[in-house]
Image (cartoon, rainbow, N blue to C red):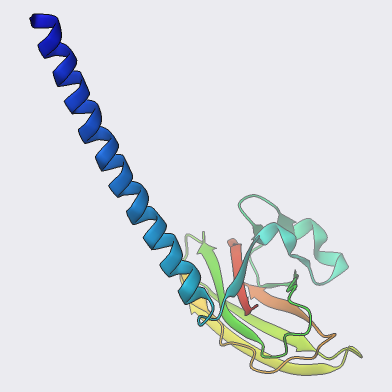
Length: 177
């Protein structure tokens, strides 16, 4: 009799488990269906994050002033300029950026420095289309205003002026799909 009760209990437990599993499958299917239905009305965003090591010294004579640990680091006691290629890959999107964030770390022992950055949009012929700039004193994230117009064949790059003993760690840029 004990074996019969054990079999009944196992059968009952399996039935409950599979019923719960079926409910879970139904909920997951409903969630995925809702996401697919909503994705047709929502605008997708394409976001890229770049390590500051993508950036390089703006002036060749200053190459020895920088190292590349956790980004690009200015090792001198004075401001140095850098340039960063910012790749956007949505061909034909001319509405600009949806977000531009930069992370900066000030390592100076003599007080916080200020980083200055500009995101530059160029026309297909290389001429300037639009510039957006921002600055931050001390360490942390700061936002550069969005580029609002762009050329179909244009390009972006960013220039920054780094204070003494500081690191540009990360650039995050988004564009519409």
